[in-house]
Amino acid sequence: MDLITNYLQYYIIPFLLFSTLLLTIFLLLKRIRYEHNKPRREAISNKAETFLTEIILSDRKDKKLSTKLSLFKKEIPLHKTWCKEMIINDMIRFKHSLKGKASEQINVFYQALNLDKYSARLIRDFRSFYKCEGFYHFQALDYKKGSALIKPYLKHPNIVIRSNANMAYISLSENHMESLKQQSSTISHLNMIKIMDILHEKKIAIPKNIDEWIETENNSVTKLGLKIMVYYNYRKQAKGIISLIYNDDDTLKKEAIIAIRELFLTEAKTELIQLFNKVSPDIQLEILETLMVIGDESIVPFLENTIPKATNKDIKLKAVACLNELDKLELNLVAINDFDITKMTKHVREIYL
Image 1 (cartoon, rainbow, N blue to C red):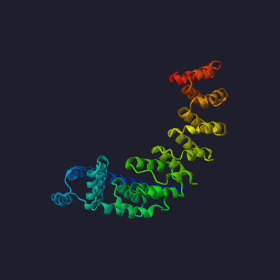
Image 2: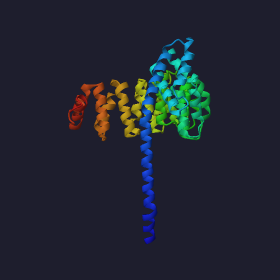
Image 3: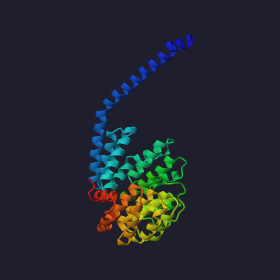
Image 4: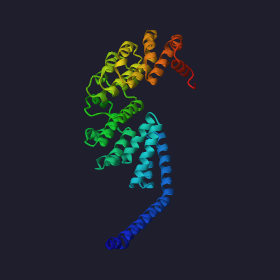
């Protein structure tokens, strides 16, 4: 016991105190250095913004541009990593704000300042964070020449690197969208959102082989295909979309029902009604939501039968809302002798009741 006490008193506690003191001094010095350099960095940032604004508005054939570029290089510490990062971030911000030829100018100077080589060096770095940062630079600046450098990482064993590489490559290479149909690994929900964002931002044309996407055995590819079909209002595969409501995967089934609703595939009414009692409550709610959009008087008998029998209150309420949307008078008749249905009817007609 005395030995442990001595160790604590003469070794461990002093070591911890000394380490804490060193860490405090280090953080303090780092903060002082940051505050000292802050005005300089802000001045360089302002200078970079002014320069970028000037070159973007200038004629590319202007002979003075090369002179201005040389002067700019001398005025800023471009050899410093933080300076490169700052300039690239400014370029990305300008790129997102501009359209057409004006934005193309940015890539010219991205190369002229050798910042593309810096991004390439990040991609070649063994650390995944830096690789992904390099991918992001090329993607955000729409630097299509960088796609060749990204391509080797499309099947990288590291899922983070592979995911970011694929997103960047899709953004830079329009034809790569079509190859997603052969994707063997699962596309995560987050990556689906990223892909849809890329489609929205880049205005990429719908993949030519989109019909095949809903026939693949990879359910995540099929789900993405459905999302893309909805985004482009693509209704040529109506039968294929409707057939997916019989898939064993509930998430895919749900996505197909959403697609039916968004694409207004009225021909799916009968099959949705037939499926209703064979699926989970979550899918039933999605079916009722869809019938509310694509339904007509022909489904009123189904709702009249479903509402009194439903034991799940969420389903009953959704069915009431659906019937209210299609035939208010019929709902009044259904609700006459049922207190719960009457309350639900009032609720769907006046949500605050």
